[in-house]
Image (cartoon, rainbow, N blue to C red):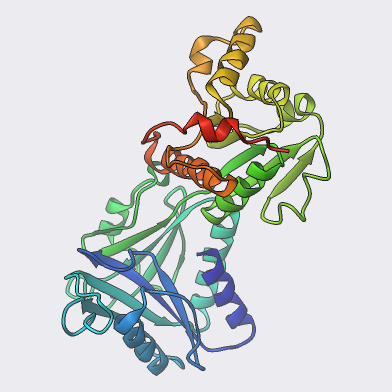
Length: 361
C-alpha cells in the first residue's frame, strides 16, 4: 500500500489525472483479496493490480471514463462465463471494486493523511460504504480511522454512519479485511519492528524479505563492513558496535521481533542473554540442537530462568526442507509472519541439518 499511496501523492503534486481503484469485497474463490489496489493513468498505464484478466481490463476501462471527474463507482463481477472464461478464472467467486477519480479538496487531504499513517507504520482502517440501499447518498464514500479508532479523514462531509463505528475492530487484534452492515473495512495493520542481530548472509536475506512483508528492520553487527546501507538498503536503522553494549540500549517492547543469526557461538550466546529476558514478541536463534543446548546451559548458569528460555524459538524457522541461504531466510520470515499474524507459530521446527551447516560470516 505504501507504493500506491506514494504514487497517488506524486500524481497529485504533478497535477496528473489518476483514478484510484480498490477491491472492497470478495466472495468465494478470487485471484485477489479485499484491499488490493490499482491506480490508472490517462495513458492506460497502471500501478498495482486487482488480479489481472478481463475483470482488471474492465475496471481500467471504467476508470478511464472517469479520469477527469465524476462520482466514485462500485462495480461487481462474477467470475463465470462472462468474466473469467478467457483467463481461466471460472472459479465462481465475486469481486466488488471501488473506482474513484482522485480530485482536489477532500480527496487530496484524505490521501495525504492516509499516506502519513501508512508511512509511520502506526496502522489505520479505511472504510468504504458499499450498500446503495442502506447508504443511498453515500455509497462510495470513504472514511479513514487511526489506530485508536478516531476519524482522521473522509472523502465527503457526510457524517459517519453509527453502524460503522459499531463494527470498527481494534487493530491490535490484527483483523483482516471484512464487510459488515454494508460497509467494507480495509485495515492497514501496524508494522512491527524486527531486530536482526548479525549482518552476514542469512541476516541479509532475512532483512530483505522481512522488509517486503512490512517489518521495520533494524540490523545490529559489530562490523561496519557487514552492517551498512549498501548491504541493507531496506533497513530503518543500522547499529554498529559490540553486541553486549548495543543490545541493552535498544528499545525492545511487546511488538518487537528479534532474530539472532550472528557468525558464531559466542556472539549468539551474548545476544540471547540480552534479548531473551526482554518483553519481545518473538526471539529466535539459528543453530544446531547441540549448539542450542550448550548455549542454554551457559545461560542457566548465568541465572536465566527456564521459563525465559522456553520462549526462545531455537532452532528458528518453519520446516520446509531448506538447504540454501535464501531458502532458510524464507523459512525464518514465514515463521515471523505466523507469529505476527496468528499469535503463534504453526508447523514443524526448522531442520537442524541445514542450519548447522551455515556459517553466517
